[in-house]
Image: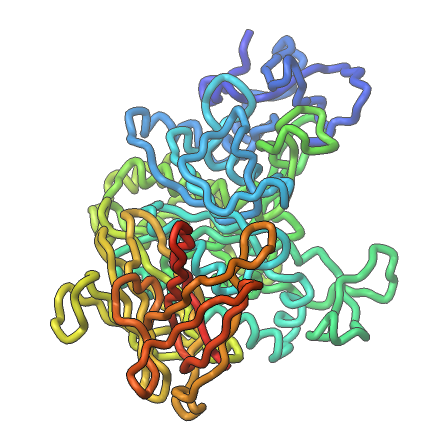
Length: 599
């Protein structure tokens, strides 16, 4: 006989219910005699006789490895979207196991699987969109197209974050899951009132705020789901090594009796995104805390705030985040089920909310991201409410109610450029690598000029020297200039719909630095073996990708050029600037090279 609540369950649910289990391994989930089990390399479902399961009919008895779906009432929401079209969801995380049997990725950027084990990103992806295919586990949003952008190693810098978000938003994803945070000692120091730590986070937040405002202004709507952070259960001590710990604190060792828990860690300091205050952007960012489950015997009778969860008014909603089963690479260690593992934290809570938001966009493709956040955070649409460590109350949304209200909401989605625009982005810095603010960037169709004002897009660089522009499919020339700076031009930039064209960073000298004085440029032309190639002609054109313009000339009007010697070496004097190098010898094809002469 089946369990009374089985009508709400996906066929992918993965339980083993036995009253007296003699398994040789300990239950990693909770001591309730419920097991995830391995059979033929995938999970399957077993039920014992109903009489051996205490009070399974109670809606508060949310047992099993996929307990998070039932806790949020997700299975009831699926019934609302049975015939819905696929929705695009982005994930910015560590690497992803693109071959996993329970996942399907539409597009992946920067996914270097050899440099990262891919467990974190893959686990997040499974919670959002694991397929309902009769194996493994079930994701929140079964009909989803996953777009991923990977970073490898430590924390990404702000420029890398901009490129990632531009790449995902440029593909018109509806939701972006960002289950990441900054170093714990920085969160702690900022929460303690350390101005240096606070300013570091807030300054990055202002840069991301300006960038996302520009992206929104280009006609792209988006919802970013972030984590509240997992630092609130950690203890810290003062650090002597200021070079390694510049904010004066470090995470304490488990046996360090001098460490204390003396402050609530604030969710607003978990990432630059969480610190954003501009209402246009903030209303499109939702921050998620984690809940756990409490058992008495074999019966789950209440939830509780996961003690690791950071607190404060920047926390928006709660979702299940403790002992969550999801997908991992097949070679992930220490798991009894190949390709599936348990993880805990706000990184697991956030993708539940991303998945519900995706269901809401499925129910109403024209709903705005701002309205999606409003519905999710509305206490009237909740399963229940939780109080964080600072006394702030936050709801855990009911997926069925949220999807129903999304379907009824008026359509006001701000997304434009659907299907035919791409994004250009890059950065301008001085010779020391510091971004240059307010440089004018003019984009024209190749073959036209700025004076003709034909199909022109003009805008300014941000505080860190970055720029972003949305333009239709085509080939463009880009002129970048500012009073007191050397102007530069990039030729033949190809823009493809739903793609980001990331241009190289350009180092721009000041005119007061004897810019037009001739500087020595030298190099070598060689075969792949390293042997130099003699009698190769070297000429220059101003700007990058300039294949047909006039050659650079000296003050006497002569073309500046050089010819390689027997060893393939060349040298000449040329003004500081941005150039396309033409390398020519009969019978050999070198192709053009872009170059910057700075000193």
